[in-house]
Amino acid sequence: MTPAVTQLEAAGVDFTLAEYAHDPKSPAYGEEAARVLGLSPDEVFKTLLARLDDDRLAVAIVPVSRQLDLKALARAAGARKARMAEAREAERATGYVVGGISPLGQKRRLATFLDASAEGLAAIHVSGGRRGLEIRLAPADLLALTRGRLAPLARE
Image 1: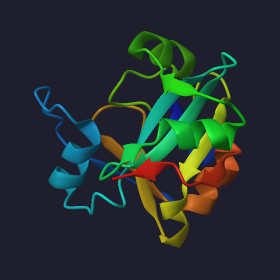
Image 2 (image 1 turned 135 degrees about the vertical axis):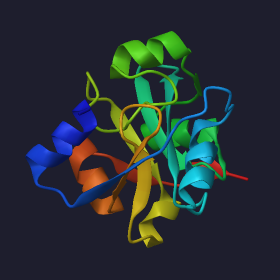
Image 3 (image 1 turned 180 degrees about the vertical axis):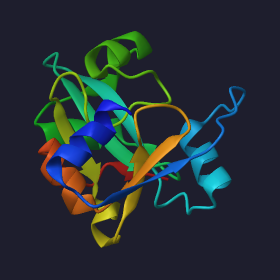
């Protein structure tokens, strides 16, 4: 299995896996997961990496129905600015390929921020560490395992 699943099993956290046949032609991985699995796009979250102006990498987890507000992420991380990380640096830092980056089981622990919209949900879905694998878990468990913080990160 993936490092994300291994981390969840080791922590004894309640989670479920959902697998689907990923279409390599799909341009938006999270939206594909929501559509194929019949989930609300507000409950499926994408994991994005950003480079802060102090050169740190940060992880932002936002619903696939919305976009990451880089200014909001910078504020949450105590930086002035943020920009999206290059795909190669995101893959190198996390150990996952783009489209399968999980907030769990990453190679390096990075500052992690979960959009505040997750707070009102009993469970959310995040990538399981490969394309076509989703993990359903409680937002509180995700925050505990990543040492993450809630913050308003998403915009329409």
